[in-house]
Length: 70
Image (tube, rainbow, N blue to C red; front, top):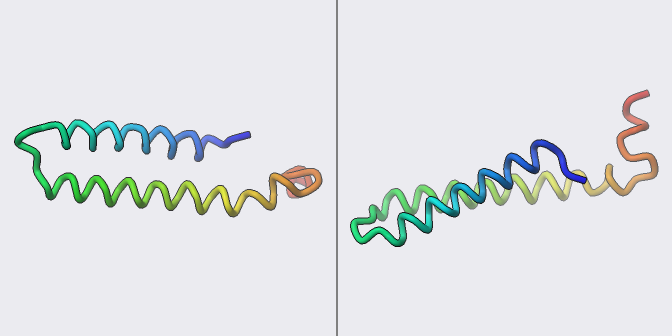
């Protein structure tokens, strides 16, 4: 089970990692852009992990989100 948020963050992570690989392969690469991109990737990973850790309780609890909608 995954939410739109999780899918979007995962998609952004893939895109940023692809951009990073392209920059690293470029002989005229800009180290500042690489560092900024690495910072963005770290932030996205933290958002993804924090969301998943927070949602574990609700996904494993009996009834999940059903009790919140009453």
